[in-house]
Picture 1: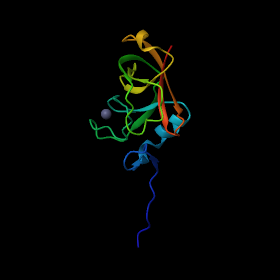
Picture 2 (picture 1 turned 180 degrees about the horizontal axis):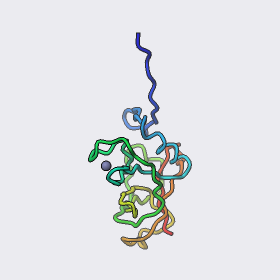
Picture 3 (picture 1 turned 30 degrees about the vertical axis):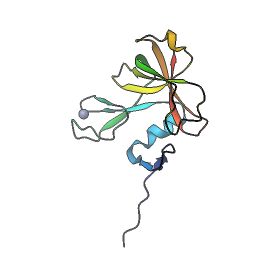
Picture 4 (picture 1 turned 135 degrees about the vertical axis):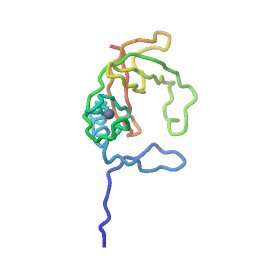
Amino acid sequence: MAEKVEYPTVKSRTLTLTHDIPISKTKKYWENLRNGKVYALKCMKCSKVYYPPQADCPECLTSQMKWIQLSEGEIETFTKVSLKPQGFEQHKEDFIIAIAKTPEGAKVMGWLENINVENIKLGTRVKITAKTMHDGFPAIILKPT
Ligand SMILES: [Zn+2]
C-alpha cells in the first residue's frame, strides 16, 4: 500500500471557507515573506521573471529556476481602500494598495505605507519588504524611499 505524502501548505485568509494553498515548489517564497523579503523566480534559460513565483517556466518548459529578491520598484498604479473586503474588516483605517514595477520586470502588489494618498505619484520609488500583519498573515509592504 502506498504511503500518504504530505505537501507543505499555508492557510488563506478566512473567507466563507478557508482552504490550503499548495506551495510545494514555492515554499521559499512564503518563508522569505516571514523574514521580510520578497522573492521571485527567474528562468535560467530565457531569463523571464515570474512573480508570483512559478516553479516552472511555461515558455521553456524547464524547472531550472533561480530565486531572486525583489527589493525596489516604482509605483505603477494604486487605489485607496475604504470599503473593506471580507477578511479585512479588522483594518479600521483606510489603506492603500499599490502595484510597483521592479527593474527585473516583476509587478508586485502590496500595501503602500508611510505616504498620504495626495502625495503618491506614478513612478514614486518604493522599497519592497514584507511583514506579518496583526491577523498573522504575511503582507507585502511598499514604502517610498
Ligand atoms: Zn524560460
